[in-house]
Length: 354
Image (cartoon, rainbow, N blue to C red; front, side, top):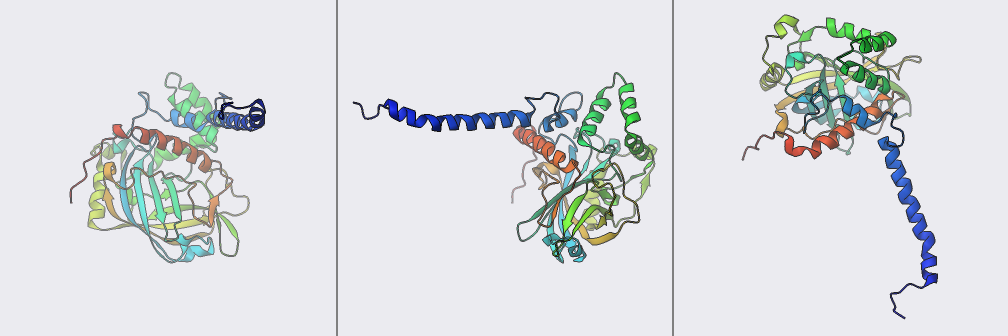
């Protein structure tokens, strides 16, 4: 008998093992199908959220699917130690920690004029010597237009339905926070610089201190520079990239700073709803300063390939009952995977030779 030939008994002995392997493969396939939404077409998936952000002509390849226009910076976070009352995270201990960040405009088109950007953003990665990272992506509105990720998706679809404006009107009629956000957007002044804007987390997080005590917080980076309002009519006369040009020149002249303030929730505050601002009288703790010391164009800048995933948190911080960070993390991952797969479409600038 050929030594490599399997006898019926040996084949039978392997049958349970093969069946188990087949079952594992089937379970994994079903898991992928579920997370991809293939088994439930009506289910909201990260891919659907990202798809809803695309402009009419389709996504701009190689770029982030939202906040596509941005510029990189580096600097430090100067912690004053006061944050240790809230969290045991190293980033709140007195010291200086390196920062990589990105100023940006909300929108899917990287060539949009700066004057067209109603919402401005700030992405940050703060690193500490123990290997921890804190990543956060903030915007300048004081609250979000909707309370839940499915409402955000529905708002995107309603806004995209240009042929029937009543769709958006009906959505706004059943979501009062949309009208409140619209009132902010139409009345809040524009500033002349990224350095003059306040950036807010909007989503809440839970901080745990060395004594094991939890605090639910939102945070804001408040500019040291005095905001200089620009009238909408004057804004339209500015150069398409005036924000990039201004922040580059300003930081070249002197580092720019923001104070990081933690706002602590009280029982009953809407920690799961970013469309509702917390009362102004909540406890606030100044925990340090962001110092931006260098601006770099994004094509070869240090922030180009960074994913500012809001669930990347150091030990001593965790997500709260707010559903948005998990939804944002999943959508950011889809966006990141798509744009990095399209790397050839991104217009790189040749590196300068030493």
